[in-house]
Structures are given as structure tokens and as C-alpha cells.
Image (cartoon, rainbow, N blue to C red; front, top):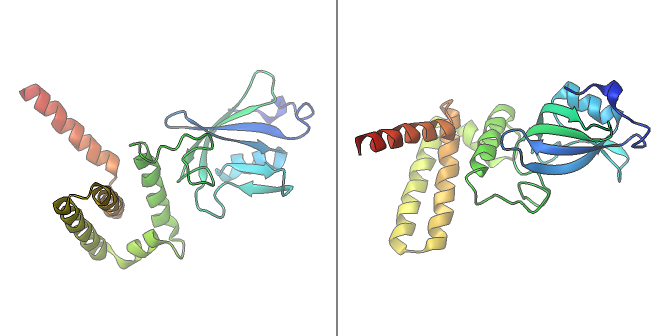
Length: 207
């Protein structure tokens, strides 16, 4: 873990470049800057905090969008003038909606499921007003189950029509609502994948 006394604040003029890395898959998410107060807030609050050079003020990543980055660990480089922060992002990191700030938009990758799982979990805990996901949780388990059923029917109809774009959109809707249903049952898509892995292993053994 980082020791603040080892930071060469004078060398970096009080602003430490902070490379943010995904704690789960090691992707580089973004680069920001931290002064002493931003680093202290990060360590104490558990939410990655930066110093905005434009606004001349601290800003907690996700304080307006809800896409926080949960602090996991931090290490200094050998010169004590750059910090590597490992964090767990809740939702997209970039303001453009991309998963990272380096044109690494993995929205079509299975990796998005991990981030979406965390986002849905956080929405369930915080219940921010104006959120569609919050509205689903507030309506309760029967409404959520009904919505999953409706999305399943809409996907089936899209398949009958043979419209690939519509099939993809309806499949995405079904997947999202399924993940909400799982969260409301204290389960996750990862546990569903575990079941599939066990079944797959069993099929290979039988074959």
C-alpha cells in the first residue's frame, strides 16, 4: 500500500499523475491528477477522487453520473512521482459512455456484464431518483419477473420477424432485465455462468 511520505510532491508541483487500472482485468481506464487532498479523500472514502485542473477543485469520479470507481489499492512508481490506482468501476468510465478513456469501448464484449452487474447492485443499494433501474426495484419482484417475461416474448417475436438488429436489441433488453431479476434475488450473472460451466464440464465428461 502507498506511503504518502514517499511521494515527491515538489517534483510534481503538488499534482500527482494517477493512472487508474481496473482491479479485475487490469485494463487502463483513465489518467487523472491528485493533490494531497484528493489522495486523502480517495483513501478515506473508498471512492477515487481527483483534482480538476480546470475547475481548481476536487471531484469524486461518478458524483454526478453515479459511475463511481471503488478504490482497491495504490502503488507509487520507483521515482515517487506517479501513482497506480487499482479500482472497480461502476458503469462506463469515460464521459463519452465508453468503458475506458482510451478508445477501448468494450460495450460489445462480455466484460460489460461485470460492470453492469456492479452498476445494478449499486442502484439497488442507493435507489437514486429518476433511475429506470430504481423504478424496477421499487415496483418489486412480481413486476420485475413480469418484465423479464415480456422481454422474452418480444425477443421471440423479433426472431420470427428475422430482423437481426431488433433481435440484438431485444436480447440486450432481456439480458438487462434478467440481471435486475438476479440482483433482486441476491444472485448474479456470474453465478449463472458458474452453472453453465459445470454443465459444460459435465457434457465434456459424458462425451
